[in-house]
Amino acid sequence: MSQEENQQIKSAVINASDVADYLAQHPDFFMQNKPLLEVMAVPHESGRAISLIERQTSLLRDRNQQLTVHLSDLIDTARHNDSQFEKTKRMVLSLLDSATLDDVAVALEESLCRDFYGDETALVLFSDRPLNVNNLRILPRATAGVIEPLMTTNLPTCGQLQLIENRFLFEEAAVKVQSAAVIPLVKGETIGLLAIGSYDPYYFQSSQGTLFLSYVGEVLSRVASRIMHEEQV
Image (cartoon, rainbow, N blue to C red):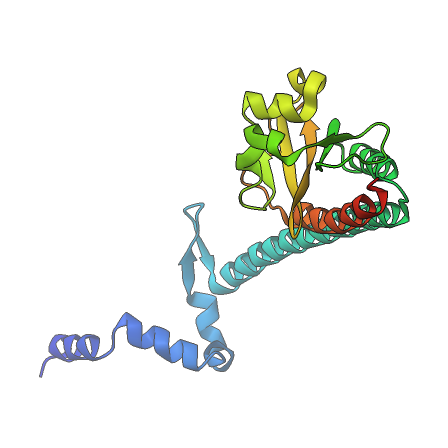
């Protein structure tokens, strides 16, 4: 058998996949065969050939940069969540301290406009009986037909509202509100709506998460329901 035929047989028996599998199973191969590191060359994006050690160093450096960016993103997210938690805690405590529905409205406006950068807030409660309030909208449930689509799912809605919905919720401020988050208040039944409006058309978007809004809605529903029951005259 000629040397050329022998080489062809070896090539047929051992292919690139076999080599890759072997190296994967023996990661210390080059530690046992260090001279190979000096003669092996790996193509680089720049077009020049570099040694295997240089290529490994480059890959590790790139991976380290990616991990650094990822870690930085995680830290930023943690800081944001921590800030959101502190703001939410302040608002919840203010709501729990509220003795009247007017107190509730003030606590919401201060928190949502100061801490969460809402430009307008609207709290609408439904009751067919009069309540002891001064500056709060109390409406019969039957008058809420135009905003019925915002209440049917019992879930927060974010984005740009229909013109008629915008006007119903924000009244004279509706011309300035370009996007909003609307939270149904549910305690057995829908007892009202909380709306947070922004002059920025992209501040509230349909794709954003609503976990925080749902939590606010649950707390507010319980507080408002309790006070409404106490303030009925």
